[in-house]
Amino acid sequence: MHADTKCVHSGADHDAYTGGLNTPIFPSSAHEYLDREDTAYPRYFNTLNQKVLVRKICDLEGAEDGVVFSSGMAAISSVLLSFLEPGDHAVLQDEIYGGSHAFVDAFFRRFGIDYTYAGTGAGDIAAAIRPETRLIFIETPTNPLLGIVDIRAVAEAAKRSGCLTVIDNTFATPILQSPISLGIDVVIHSGTKYLGGHSDLSAGAAVTRADLAAKIRHTAVNFGGNLNALSCYLLERSLKTLAIRVKRQSENALEMARYLDGDPAFGKVRYPGLPDHPGHDTARGQMSGFGAMLSFELGDPDFPVDDFMKRLRLIRPAVSLGGVESTICDPARTSHSKVTPEARARQGISNSLLRLSVGIENIDDLVEDVRQAIYR
Ligand SMILES: *Cc1c(COP(=O)(O)O)cnc(C)c1O
Image (cartoon, rainbow, N blue to C red; front, side):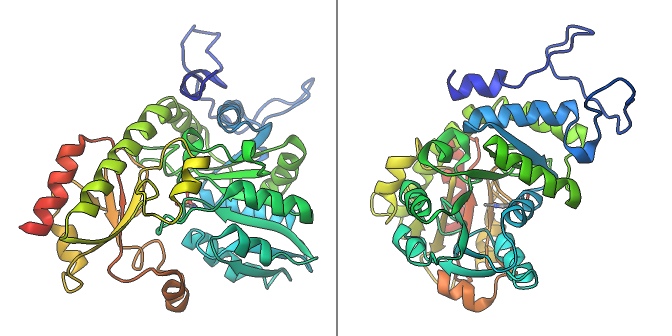
């Protein structure tokens, strides 16, 4: 089956009682246990709504098994602490999501885990591997600078060194990028973003091989970041339109990037679909579209970003991304506010950088919105 068909049909558990086409919502937290092998309990990640959702995401990512969480960070923290022990070393890309950065800085040393932040080049990541390195964590495209990591090259370097590879595939989605087919072990998503797609739920997922999924589930059961039945249902429903949403958003983003790039009123535009983007060729080789996130600066460095955002009529200044509606934010004050100013400067996240999440609206309306905001 193709991905767009899987979005609609994978994992589905039709309602045998009424013949309804949708998975029923089973809110019970207590279930009878006598004469039953597998008694469901939400924090054991084995309720029907959780299982159906896991099956759909696994099918989309080409994974065997997985866990759905109450947030992307619940997935990230559970996965990282499932595979790292005191004395281990981890290599993390410097440009990972701000919340992931904050988690690593707050907890790794406390648990005796050593770590190195590496640049976005596969060579930078390979060079940071040590004999005691157990895990490599990457994210591509990156947030908010849209850096591209060569997934195959990282997976090969990791295999040579016997390290586990984990990727945050939130920005690309399984529609545009299939990391497991490129050699990655564990794929993580913030379901709050594209998988949910309507800015109305919080969720996370980690999908992988069956043996690794069992380890993650063991950690997750203890941490307790399970997803409730209603959110499972909402996310399952959202996934049915994932392919068409992401394709439209990605096409819109390419047109928006070309417009911004060609208008001198705007400064540097970062979008992997632009030929002069440093990761353009790598992105072509591992993605089937360039995604719907882009970042840019205003041509006039003295033009306050708040004024620009307030003049927008359609695109909403909002934290988060990946919804059907276009949203914009300045990462220095939002997603990366918990990253130290030094780390932000090292990565190139200036105070005037704007990150745009392009929605499914008509592209002409979106282009007109940014145009009128800068020229008004
Ligand atoms: C938002 C985000 C996360 C964290 O997800 P939450 O659902 O907010 O916990 C992780 N990675 C990326 C790339 C994100 O954009």
